[in-house]
Image 1 (cartoon, rainbow, N blue to C red):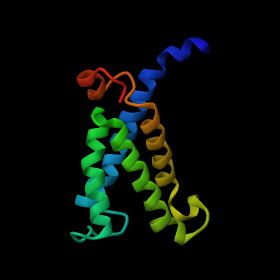
Image 2 (cartoon, rainbow, N blue to C red):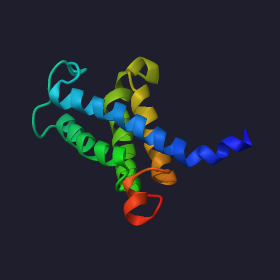
Image 3 (cartoon, helix red, strand yellow):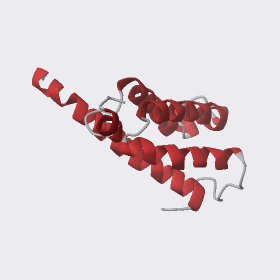
Length: 133
């Protein structure tokens, strides 16, 4: 298993990329009804809390996907997901599986981990600045 440690930077990038691809789908569903209708059943009205959340997600999600401004994007998205959980999910029920907040919790902690760990092996931060995020 110790020999697997050498793949940690690559796996960090894969975790970041796959997480962002799925996360961006949540944003497009919420904002444009693609690939399916939003969970709320309707698109958010402009300038509402849901609309602002979708705008943050649709802006920072692709930046994080390609690994630019990685730590800042991940930190902001982590905070947004914590806010989404406590405002949108927790009031429905104590248990995340029952309040449909499990994805928000996972995104929150994955993004927090990426904010601490950086871009990984592949990303524009590394290419453009020669740094890890």
